[in-house]
Image (cartoon, rainbow, N blue to C red):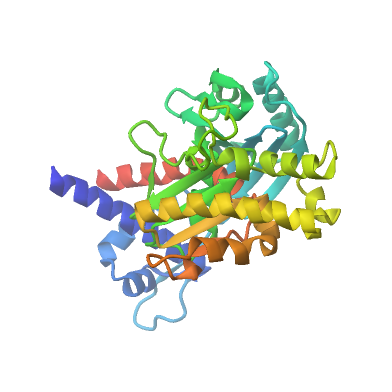
Length: 388
């Protein structure tokens, strides 16, 4: 049994390595792949044949570099398949269409407080139909990945618990039925971790936590190149670490959760109260200069106290190679980075400040991560064929 598991993992690894190679090199031959990656020529041939069958690569004649015998030259075809990513937030809905390379074909963000509407699934369906209008290659779309803050049951396509949305056991299968496409549900922090791995080429073989700060706060954890979800997919509920005894009441039922002090909504509420404002948006905290005032600096000082406490706890628990902070706050990291690092690395255990960084993609990681989910099944099917 152990041998079978090892063989399957090795086949997955080989396909991933070959795919990585072809995605980085526009033109290539089988021999170039074999020599570069140290994978046997017969194995490379089998993988190439499977990729060619799916038109992920296409023949482009013969290589001019090989003088002894003609070698078929191949070209990577990232537009062989497409995928849709959806990100659900309390007051916004985002769509993205990407190709196999992760290139953005189309993206839109709809700002609307729609989520607690009983008919929000139907609203998503209608908006997605509008989003795809005019796209000529709908038959090449492999599926729909959905990123949402909360606990999801991907097998049954149910949003089980969305504390910030006050929703429980919400069936999402109508989206699948409407578009006749498989759908994949994932917690937004986990989707963000996947997005970072695809977008940030330096994270291979590293153990990371991607901290997603949105309307809620979560952590996507990658250990040994695998997304760690836990026994019942509840791992990474970083926002429900207790950081204040007898603190603010959280939607989860506990008090003093990190989410109540470091989520976007919590930060907006703090600024509204301190500046006697209403209907403030997250971006306005910075565009209106509120963050640069003495009161604004005091708010962020307290904000980093709580965030540093949570980050230290996760580092003590997992001893990670990297912690990446994502979400809108990543676009404004200059306001908190110095103070946050001073507070996280103020002990004898952690001294390497470079393990903590802010995402270069802001609040984009979990959307792109959701869009990559359908491609996973595509490659699982390739492994299954390869095993035959």
